[in-house]
Length: 179
Image (cartoon, rainbow, N blue to C red):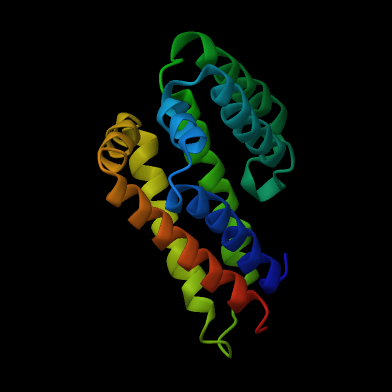
């Protein structure tokens, strides 16, 4: 992944999430409130996270337990399938957390050993904050539900968070064209 693309993708995602919150779009707010316990979102996010993780397992090198990749693949596939039956609560949040953690690797590797661009730290700081939040929300997924309830309690908070997300997304998008 190029460094420009690594900045542009999160920038566009932040703008796409920030503007509807900034203008208090009720459809987006209702969708976000329902997200943590949504079964359809669980299938999408946890399914995508499981597929990406299983893809990584299947392509392990010999140094990384590659000789045992087939048993590992089927064991983790069974665990992912059983998660839908045994722990369906907040599975969408866990899936989103896993997707963030898996996406952090190519994002950070795009700027690996790049020291001549000081603006890269906007991306790296954002990715590290996302990693910390993904670990925290992945282990305690009800915290996202509580945060969303707090966020949508007053319109000012929603607009403020939307403005902050949109502004940082625009910053990352602008920085993407400086490389």
